[in-house]
Image (cartoon, rainbow, N blue to C red; front, side, top):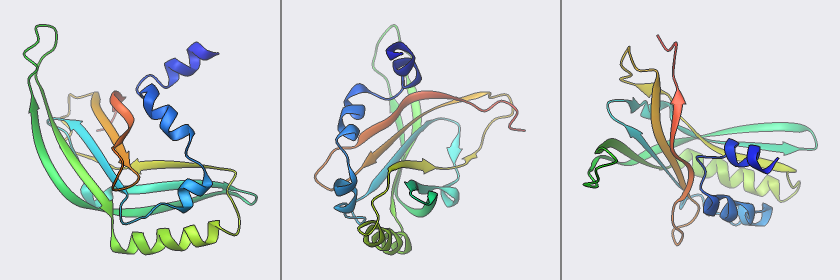
Length: 171
């Protein structure tokens, strides 16, 4: 069972799992939505569709699952070239996108936090959703990383670390 769990979460660092395991309802209610940040790194030449990028929050309540999508605004886009001068790994080129909640999303997030004080969710999931652009016809996988920062004082938490995602049949 443990082997399957570790294999299933192989692109999520253990440190991130430990940080997120301590995150509870009170932690969620104390979040300042102005400080929430998301970061996506995706290997070249693929890019993401910024207009279709959102923070998604799924809450399990006594009435079932509720899904909330919060539009994100771009804070920065960087083209990064990393060359570790290592014989065993090749240089990496990727695009890094940093996002914050849009003004409308901040307002809606705060309204949700107020509602959650009345009914605590049983569980929740936080995702960053996006679509791809500039995907070459012959490419059947992409490599990406996804990070989230929960406060201005905290570091980014790695949610998905240089994981391979199958995009076969995208045409």
